[in-house]
Image (cartoon, rainbow, N blue to C red; front, top):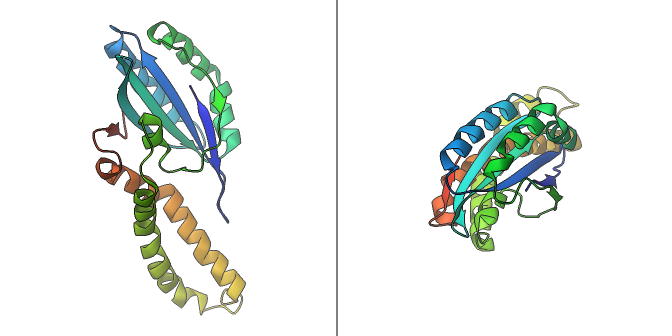
Length: 201
């Protein structure tokens, strides 16, 4: 079932995650895997698509799939949800799904760790804090140093508010688009032991 989760950060576009959960009927596992590869490829070509994570597990004896698609905005996500391509693919998968394809909007605070939470119990808050700290701390130390020489070249750029905005924007974009997704994947075995997680189907 898709669940739209939204998080906004200062100086960046709205980042939206679309969580799609499917339970696959017995005997349809191979066909579903082929279908999943196809729909991930189609979604990846959509404007505003930022990437996808796939979490595989078991629920009530059936293969359970949690797909987390990230989009740059609510509008980009909605265009994908309303697209004829997605509707045709969902109709194609319907006979393979035990619970069908349902939609639910549900804001969640644990944005980056939502794939792990959907696969089972969420990681302990202290582990989430450790991973977040490991990503944020190097940025707060290095980004001001990298911007420093450039900010001194222009009086406008050296203004405290402008300089702070540029440094914060750089940190936010780097964390949101690159390093937090990488960190959650890297630390998945530690965050949620025993959970099968992959970035592609």
